[in-house]
Image (cartoon, rainbow, N blue to C red; front, side):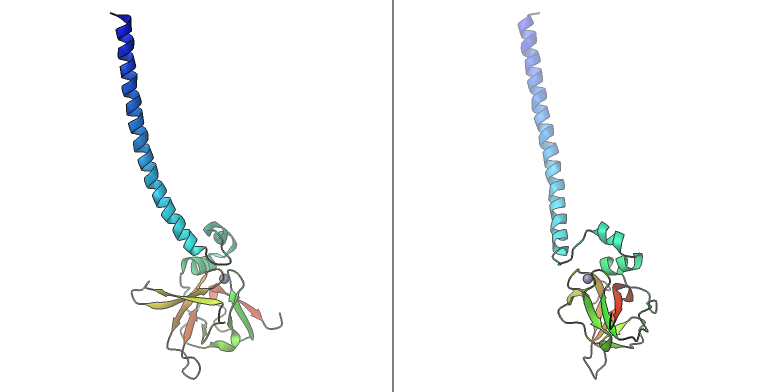
Length: 182
Ligand SMILES: [Zn+2]
C-alpha cells in the first residue's frame, strides 16, 4: 500500500469528521439558541414584575415573609374568611403593606362588611395600584401595593352607599397595623 495514499485517505476521513463536528456544533447552537429565547422571555416577565420601587427576588420574599404573607402578597392567594386578627380591630391607626411598610389604608375608612375580610371604603390614594384579574372567570378589580406590588385584595362596588360605595376586600395577612401615636 502506498503510504501517501493512506495518509490522504486518513486526511479525507478526518476532514469528514470535522464536518460532522461542525454540524453537531450547529445543532447544539440551535438548541442553545432555543433555550436562550425562552430565558429571555422569562427575563421580560421578571422585568415587568420589578418595575416597583421595592423589588426583591422570589427567594428574598420567601425568606422574609411568613408563609401566609408570602402566599397572599406574592402569589395572590386569599386567606380564609374570618381568619385575620385585624378583622375586628377597631383601634385608630394605619394599615401598612406587610411586605414593605407602605401605608395603604386608614382605620377611619374601615367598616364591618360581614364578609370575613377586613374591609375599607377607600385606599390611601397613590399607595395602592389596581389591575383587572380574571382568576375566577369574571373580571375583578385586583389591588396591590404600589411600592412593592404585593397583592392586597379586590375592590367591589357593594360598599357603604353613604360614603364611596366601594368595598376594598383586603387580606389581613397582607397588612400590618400601626396604632396612632406610634
Ligand atoms: Zn408593599
